[in-house]
Amino acid sequence: VSIGIGILRDLAEHLRARCPAARYVVIADSGVAPLLGDRVREAAAGVAPTDLVTFPAGEWNKTREMWAHLSDELLKRRVGRDGAIIALGGGVTGDLAGFVAATYLRGVPYVQVPTTLLAMIDSSIGGKTGVDVPAGKNLIGSFHQPRAVLADVETLVTLPPIQLSAGMAEALKHGVVADAHYFEWLVEARRAIKQKDLDVMARVVVRSVEIKAAVVAGDERERGIRAILNFGHTIGHALEAVSGFELLHGEAVGLGMAAEARLAHLVGIADQSLGRMIAEALEAFDLPVRPNTVAPVSELLDIMATDKKSRAETVRFALPERIGTMARGEGGEWTIAVPRDAIERVMEELA
Ligand SMILES: NC(=O)c1ccc[n+]([C@@H]2O[C@H](COP(=O)([O-])OP(=O)(O)OC[C@H]3O[C@@H](n4cnc5c(N)ncnc54)[C@H](O)[C@@H]3O)[C@@H](O)[C@H]2O)c1
Ligand SMILES: [Zn+2]
Image 1 (tube, protein in one colour):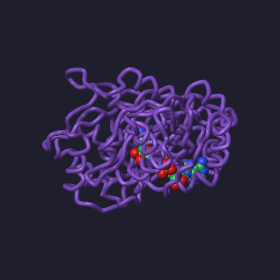
Image 2: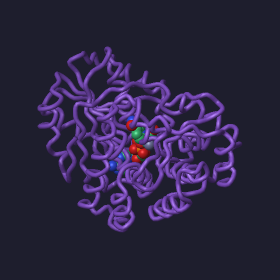
Image 3: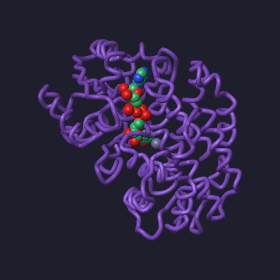
Image 4: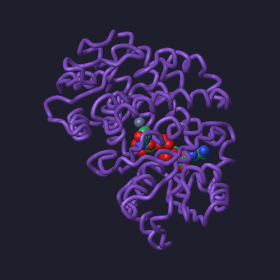
């Protein structure tokens, strides 16, 4: 993982060193392609013939259909097993292009060039790829590690403020699950972050990547500790799903963290102040702390049960004891089974 200011200009070198190929296909969405598509295609073309393939931006396009369409575009171009993919964009592009790479001709190498804060600190790291389906988010996918991740924080200059905030939800999550100092520093540095001071942004990306990479390195296939990165995501994914794409992933995760912190208090794991501290941090980055989508709690619970592939009576959550420390179950496991009625209570309080 390379992180820096202006490092996109070294793309050709990175490709030669970490992902040599006879041919590259850059995959970018309709928001990123006009900003960076030509630049990245031309840089890669210095190494091998390169095409740019685009798809319409938006979470609603992270589908099996778009995976099929992009795979067909590669087949049409007769890209062989000596080809490689460059995923240029946010988490939607990374997950989708990564899944194409995981499955195309049984797997070709790929490189992540994340251009949203969320993608730099979270989705480009760890090798999870996949698509959303009507039954829930990310339910069809694969683990496929990128050969390299090139995060140039300069690309964040054009990122809309709401997308920056959405990324900050995941950064705050990294603080909650692993590093209280980082959490406090993020809140203190909020002005510089919101102004996208590039040195400060580089620090955010470096620390978050360190945290995520360390967790993933210890448990690539999520049999144990990797589950702590799901803090905020069990309730978050359910809210995201019922919002009909009104909520950005990061916004939904923020709401999920606020709710799951309250849940941690309700089941006796955390102090009441945890929920307040998390809500204040979210507000510092202009993130919502109360969902404005009204959906029956039973519907949300059904989604949560599918999301975690668990039995319906309880749902397992990764819950913080306090900022920086996650709770362990009796057998040392990193998730705690929470009865439905506790979840119902928290969701009703929030509604
Ligand atoms: N694989 C993982 O481990 C993992 C982890 C976290 C999130 N995710 C997934 O990531 C997705 C969310 O990613 P996201 O928040 O990056 O959304 P996104 O990819 O949809 O990007 C958000 C928007 O910003 C635009 N954009 C991207 N870079 C830009 C730039 N530099 N300047 C201007 N506009 C730019 C895009 O065109 C898009 O419209 C979700 O699907 C989520 O499930 C995956
Ligand atoms: Zn996430």
